[in-house]
Each structure stands twice: as C-alpha cells, then as structure tokens.
Image (cartoon, rainbow, N blue to C red; front, side, top):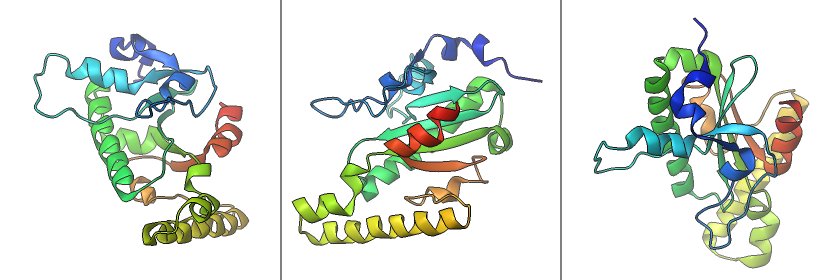
Length: 199
C-alpha cells in the first residue's frame, strides 16, 4: 500500500523551503547553503513535534530535511557548512540513526522499507573543506591530515567518475544498502548540478 505522505500531519505541518532547512543556525551569522525554494519536510521541526510532551532527558538528533519526489522516493538531506571534523561526522551518524527511527515510527515502516525507498545526501561546504583553505590559514598537524584527506577526495572523485561510479566521503558508504538505498556526498555546486536540477 502506497504511503500518502501529504496526509501525514507531522509532515504536512512542518513544510518549509530547502533554503530554510539549509541555514547554518549554529553560526553567529547564519548562511544558507542553497537558495532553492523547493518545498521539503523540515525534519528538525518534525522531531521537535514528535518528542513534544515526552519529557526526555536526551533530545534526539535529526537530519535537516526530508524530500519526497513524485514517485514516492525519499531523500534525507543534511547540510554541513563548517569544517568536517571527526566529531562532526559522529554527529551525522547519530542524526541518521535517530531520524530513521523517528521516520519509521511515523510512517509505520521498517529498515527494509528504507533500504528500498530512502536515500541520504550530505551537502558540505567545499571551500571550508579544501586543501587550499588549510594551506593558507593553518599549519597544525590536524590541518595537514585534513589536507591529505581533501587531496584523497579529489583523486577519489576523479577515478570513481572515470569508472562511472559515485565517490562517497566521510565514511558514509557504510550506510548504503544497510539502511539506505543510496548515499551521496555533494559539495554545494554538486548538489545544485546533480540533484536540484533533476528534481
């Protein structure tokens, strides 16, 4: 039986633009990572509505947005505007786990359903995660390690594209085929070119 997502109150009551969900609220000067006005489910707000009245000692994490295409395929989207560090990725992992549990409870499905119909996209700031940025502004050991990772990513993307495959960064490939149908890691421009222009 097909799920009528537009009839689910928690989704219907928490719609917003993709631009709004991409806003970096942790920054003193919030920036948006996309200007797209495409309507999505603001999953941060869904989570807040979902846990209201539970009196929890711990607030679960959540992905920024849930996009549902006309064929019923779903895309959890997480925006990361800052420098990607190990604790940042750990936080993304927690967001994935908590978001899937909340989503499955709301729609009455399980992980098998997610493996067939749900995808995950991480959109990251290329400028803040490039070797040039580290070379110009920092010289610490951590930055040199990051610099190597950034170079590895560029080389990886090149060879994967030659093989007509996608390159998944930050260890997120572990979630593909286990929890999600597909996983994508995009720079802002790649997100625009590869996803928004085809949605």
